[in-house]
Image 1: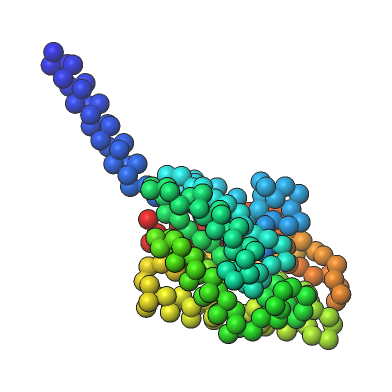
Image 2: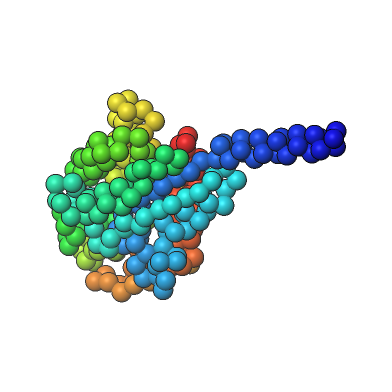
Length: 258
């Protein structure tokens, strides 16, 4: 009888420890918002290799993460202008994706945003070139609506990654687009600072390291493409997409999001 009691107590202890361990884990539902880089354009198997998949897989492997569900809402060629709520287009798709997660009481809803590459172009994409101040305004308009619809959600804004100076440019305007992209990061920091005062704990700066990483490793991890001003580098290859996903995953993981 005493042996049976000891076994019972041991099982109860194991159950309680297991339950406590599970309760300490974090659960995330992530909607990734972005352009062709987020979508995984140029990758042989974007459904398996795009940065959102890689970021979610990296997070899933962490000991304190219980589960990660996600939706990839990256769309090639899009700007912050395309995702404005008033446009009635891609924002609605983001909302539809988020609504699928809305009723989950266990997981935190996260919007992971990396936009700016197409905004910085001299011409071509919708609204380009988007000035740094307008970039700030557009992001704020998008985030304000997301937080109005999903008050418990968190927003993570990643710095857009480096691209070669001749991307989306003719030979007359080398570096103009990249210089504009660099200024966007200042606007991201200012915007997160604003939310830090008005809505603390809801909007964060995400990854800031991938920009310099790809600048240093573009020949190895970005795809060479033909453009008006010669070969340019913009989209990650399979290895680069995995690396970018890891940067995103680490940035999300280190934030005080539960």
